[in-house]
Length: 110
Image (cartoon, rainbow, N blue to C red; front, side, top):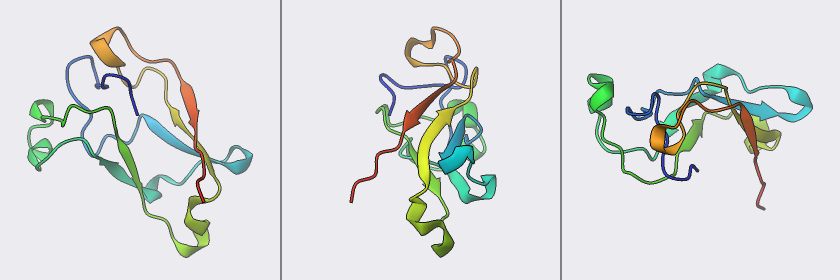
């Protein structure tokens, strides 16, 4: 969740294939394999982002869902501890400049 939205450059939105800013952190400092990170959801409607990514119209809310492909051996993602946003990969709300690297802890709810 972001407070006020996020963009790739201060103007253009993230698209469903914009996975590179995010790293899924696991226990013992490991990261999730990239082939398990399918994409982003809850951004907007339609498939126009595939042909016109700069014109993609988002839903305007602050939520982004990270979609993962987990196997039985992944234990439902129980070893996921945090999501890291890579430095200089997105612009926070209002386009005030690129982000710093930071992590957000993942809470587990039973």
